[in-house]
Length: 181
Image (cartoon, rainbow, N blue to C red):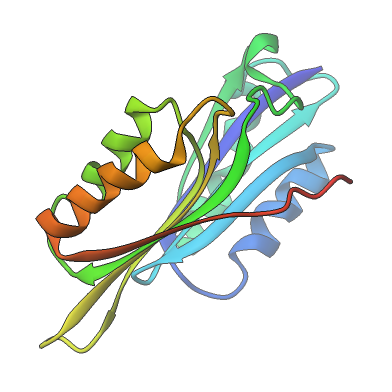
């Protein structure tokens, strides 16, 4: 069985998911994992797909030519090795939500991500957005992250205090209950 990553980017409009999933259905692909969002009017989607017969991206890629042309999309297909495909979480930690709010300025994502990396915190989801008026834009960042069991949350909070002062942002950290399916 061949596994592939498929990325889709283009100006947002209705029907993108329908057209991409139609091609996958007609090819006999299974969508195993996916995420999509709209970023400042641009649609972005990443999927992990599987096919029983195909093993090379070049075998699947041409089937998207009509969708690329008709919808003005950039669609990329990449083959994945077996070791790149895992259903295991692969990381042991406590899930947390980290929210950051403040005046829009460069360096917010980097400053928070740098500190999380120092503590071996795995960021599992990241969303950012600028909200408010043009005169008073507010930067909003929400991260889902797995914090290793051995991390002292007080130490991490001290680092966040430094970032709060340095960038004049609000940072909140709260544990979330994990869901067993």
